[in-house]
Amino acid sequence: MWRGGRFLPDGLLSEGATGSRAHPLFRMFVRWVRRPLLAVARLWRRNIQLRVVTATLLMSLAVVLLLGLVVIGQVSNGLLDAKQQAARSQAAGGFAVAEQLADDAADDVASGGAGNVRDGRQDTGTWLNDLVTQLASGGQGVYYLVALSSEEGPDTFGADEGSGSHGPRASFDLKPEESVSPQLREALDDSPDTYEQYGTIVLEGGRTEAALVIGKRLNDPNGDPYQLYYLFPFQQEEKSLSLVKGTLATAGVFVVVLLGAIAWLVVRQVVTPVRMAARISERLAAGRLQERMKVSGEDDIARLGEAFNKMAKNLQTKIQQLEELSRMQRRFVSDVSHELRTPLTTVRMAADVIHEARDEFDPVTARSAELLLGQLDRFESLLADLLEISRFDAKAAALEADPVDLRDVVRRVLEGAEPLAERKGSRFLVHGDERPVVAEADARRIERVLRNLVVNAVEHGEGRDIVVRLASGDGAVAVAVRDYGVGLKPGEANRVFNRFWRADPARARTTGGTGLGLSIAVEDARLHGGWLQAWGEEGGGSQFRLTIPRTAGEPLRGSPIPLEPADSRRRGEAAQAPPGGADAPVPPPA
Image (cartoon, rainbow, N blue to C red; front, side):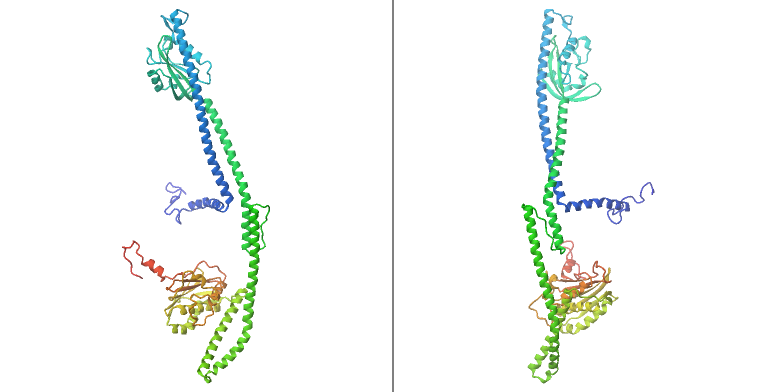
């Protein structure tokens, strides 16, 4: 796999790395990462208990962290204040003892008493050693002591200790030069006041400790100035603060976990009935109307369950009543349709005899005979449609599918509607009939659907051209009927297939329609596993599209003809709109 010093010949990511040109390894990695993330996101969206518990844990963690910071700050400030007060008191006492010892040594030298005296002067080197040892004797682990020379004195810092100079002295294993900052030494040289500073103690071996340094310039028995420092480490305070932090952390984790468990239990008590109601609602929606919730107790959840059960019972009763009423209506329509055929046949025979003899009647009676025959034709058509609707309602309609070329079906429908189109002044324009459009379909039902669509287009086309389009592709065939008449108002495209619905109730049915044609047509389309859809705009005409699978029983994935035609006013306005604003030139229409 090595080529040109690279692991992949074109690199892991190429142009369009997130699209189809990304490297297969990268796409595999994205899918591998995306799958668990999608599962987590789906669980997060669907599980309210998880969201509530997670939110409770996050808010509890934020509260615990905030309280922990406040408590740690308060404890730290309290320890620091106590440390400062104790250190100041200890240092003040030590400075007083040092001054007293210096005065006593000076009195001894003046009175000629015993002591380390050399040439009439006190041996300050030995005296400082004794002073540091004495003052530090009770402070092991509590404080350190450092004695340094002062720039105001006759000696320099770091001179030989044996010569009586004020060289550095320190208790225990402290490094005096590195433990006291030059700024603090300069401050003590400038003023005899007591100064304090936070610093760092440097011990033998390189160890360091944070400490509070308190220093003061004093005089030795000879009257020469020197600097005495108390260094108070924060080791004990740091241990105490660490103990407090550990305790707070342990308690915080315990509190967060406890609050999470409490939230989980509380939410579970509320969510469980809701989940039960959701499951039962899904079963009710699936037709299992006998399902009910289990109710226990008298709380709000119990009242919700009782109300839900009562609603389900009433819903079951109403649905059963509606189903019974629907069965009675379907049976009534079917029975009436069948029963009317016998007397209608007799009336038809009589009407035919009267119609044949109309030339012997006076004009009024002859016209009545013609009207009688026309209304009988419409009555027979209505009975046929009612019988067909009753078959669909009873699920008794059967599909007789054979390979059919839809061009032949369209040709027969247009030939039958030609006289009506001539009376209305419309022309038929057929597109897409250059190649065969073959599908497994019931030719009788498809012809009935197209006849309804074409007749309606002529009826509402206002004398304009009627365009019929045929197309096939992607496992489907489609036929669209386009008119340029009154069109459909917003929302009417969904109601146009309802039984006995009319877009304009005041409009007369000159063709003798029954109001059931589109209802039967949409049932025929569904029987084929297809779609019958409508589009329209007020004043801009309408288009009805029939789409069926090329092979019977195959699912539809789309239609080869768009539902909204390319010459609709909305698309025309969008095509003519200037892309660059009002000042841009408008292209000429295609």
